[in-house]
Each structure stands twice: as structure tokens, then as C-alpha cells.
Length: 519
Image (tube, rainbow, N blue to C red; front, side, top):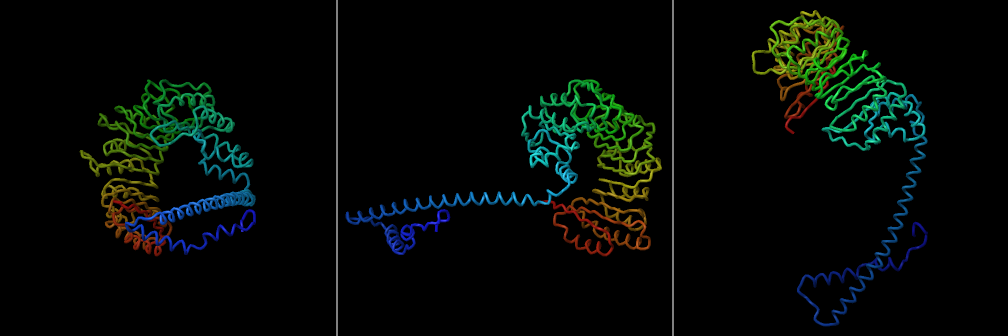
């Protein structure tokens, strides 16, 4: 029965091919002749074969016609099925639970899915797609001033990011963001910047709303002179600058009186050529910057309100410095993160006086020279003792066990401890197990070097057991979490078999992270 016209199919056509017994016998006979050197010798036999060829060609023609008819039927059925699926999705969409969400919750979901930011260089950015779902979603999306006020501008660079919007459209989208954010403070990030002529056009467009800037990040390498923001920088709190500036002094942000957070990356002599309200900075992050003799120390002495300081692999910190350096008083400093070689680490910590310090992160690499791990620990211990601070969080990376133990003896109030790539970390764990060095510790994070797991596993077990015995009598400050990362060539099954039962017995949550080496 035909599925479209409900008419019986041509029975003669199907009957011609339903039974192939005689045809199969004839094919086997012909196949046996093909396997020999047989060739027909008389005209009668040749004519018989020619008639058979003609019959096969007619059969093929009939079958092709029938296949075409059936394919047409299949195409119609597929279209009907597609229509049914679409109708099903429409009806199911009417009953979708998300349609019952209040606008406030729907808006929060939109902010989460976009990370609260808008990419003006891609038409596939989530922010632009949300408003095209339906009229209600469009209304909710347009009401999210926070999303439209946070603008990301990708202008090429070293990544594989592919722009999907033409340059004129980028300018149009930036203008839309400015309009939709209304009077909300703007957060602007020029990301992955290469040499792109669109940068100046976009910066000029955004400059018309500079009085609304709360955050901006850009590269100085694209500027030949300091731009002037005629509408002021009344709200600017966060500034990120990177790259080498080809001009002299840079003074565009000197009147940003609300500026408190500053991030600098890859800049030469920042304190010498950047004219900024340095004295009001509370958060400072310096990454791969280069300083002249004494510039770094002079900078710190001009930051009386600094509360959060990050310095990562900056150059020139200890170049040709005098033997005695004036004390650096940072009364409000609470968080200090230092990634540096031993020499600049020693140079920076010795004069530091930070009585409010609570969090200290130290990353260093021992290199050939006159400085040893003992001198590193001496400088850290001296800074802690001289400041009279009470640390609650400490992170040590790439130091040896003696250095780590000396520092831990000076920090009895720690509640969070991170140890990364410590030489002979087992000795540190044994030191913590034998005496109540850290009675208030609640979280321990341990990152092992390659194949270090076998060396520290039993010391780690002993540490947990010792803590469990001691704190069962005094549960005021319970150790809650141990987060350990193993880097092994042969897997960590033998370690988990020891730590998992221990976690169940003591109540300490032991999180095991694994990195397989050599795959």
C-alpha cells in the first residue's frame, strides 16, 4: 500500500523481482563460464547473450523508476516528520519551566551565561544572542545594564580568536552598549591587542563617556602620545596598562582621583614615566616590569594606603642598591604575593614593615649564587618578626624543607597553608606532626613534584593521624580539608587506597588531584 496515495503498488513490477531462483541459477552458470577461457563460437549463442543483456537493461530501468518513486515518498515523509518535530518543540516550549521564571531570576541566568560581559567583536557572543530568543527575553536582556556596561574589545593578537563582525559594525555595537548601559559605570577591556587601526576609533568613541569609566585596560604600545579625556575620569577605580610606551611621560590618568587599583604588565620604569595618583593606590599588581636602580623601593615608599601587593618576576629590583635601605612602612598591607629570585626577594623583605599582613605568598627558585635557602627563610622570618604581624594564610613554593620549617615556626596562627614543590616535603609534614606548630590550621594544600608521592604518603598519613589524636581532645580548631596533587608516572591508586579510608576515619576531607606524567 502506497503511504501517500493509499493505492496498491504495481504487483507485476514486484512479482518480476520477488523470485530470483531462475535468475540465480543462470547467473551461476554464466559466472562459471567467466572463470574459464570460454568464448561463444556460434551466432545463436551470441544472440542469446545479447537478448539477456537487453532484458537486464530493461529490468534496471524499471527498478530505477521504482527507486525514484520511493525516494520521492521518503522525502515527503521526512518533511512531514520534520514538521511534526517542529510542532512538537513549539508545544513543548510552551510548557518549558523556564517560561515560569520571574524576570529577576532569568536575568541572573543571563548574567551567569555571559559572565556579565559583552563581546562587541563577535555576533555569536551570548549577549547578542539572548535578545533574539523571544520578546520577553529581549526585554529582560535589554534591562541588564550591568551586562552592557562591561565591554570586551578583541582587536587581534597572538590567539586564534576569529572576529565575526566587520569594523564598522564593531563601532555600532560599542555605541549600542553605551546607550543600553544608560548611566551605569563602564568596564572596558581591550584584549589581545595587535597593531589595529580600529583601536583609536573605538577609544575615541568610548572617550565621549570617559566620565562613566570605572575600569579600563589597554596597551600603551598603540599610543604615540597621552590621550586627553575631556569629560574627566570621575569614576575610574581600576586601571590596567601593558606594553611599551613609545612616548615620554604618560599623564592621561593623573587626575583620576578615585583610582585605587592598578595592574601593570611588561612596562619599563613605570614609576618614572607614569604620572598617576600613586599615593591613593590600595591594590597594585606588577608583572614582568623593569625598574631602574632604586625605583622599585622608591615606589613602595610612595604607597601609604597599599593593602594588596602582587609582584611577579619583575626586573631590576636589586640592581646596584645601597647596602642599607630605608625601612618601608606599609601599615595597611594585608596581602603580599611575591614571585622572585632569591636576591630581589631578600632585598624586598628585609626593609618591609607590615603589621596588618594576613596573607603571604612566596614563590622563588634557588639559583647559583651567594644566596641560600637559609637566607631566604631569614629574610621572611625577619619580615614577620619585625612587622609583628599575625598571618592567617601562607603559601610557599620551590623552597626546601628547612626553609619551610623555619617559616612555619613563626606563623602559629595559620588557618590556611599551601606548600608547592617543596624539596623533602615529607620532612615538613613530620615537623608538623611531631609538635603542635599550627594548632589553628583548617586547610592544607600540597602540590608534589614529579614522583614525590611515594616519599610523602606515609608522612601525610602520620600528619592526619597525629592531628586527629590531638584535636579529638581539643576540637576548637578542626582541620577540615587536605587538598593534595600528585604528579606520577605510574598512577596514584596505591595512594588513594591509603587516604580514602583515612578520610572516613578522621572526618578530614581529603581531595586527591592527579597528573599523569609521561603520557
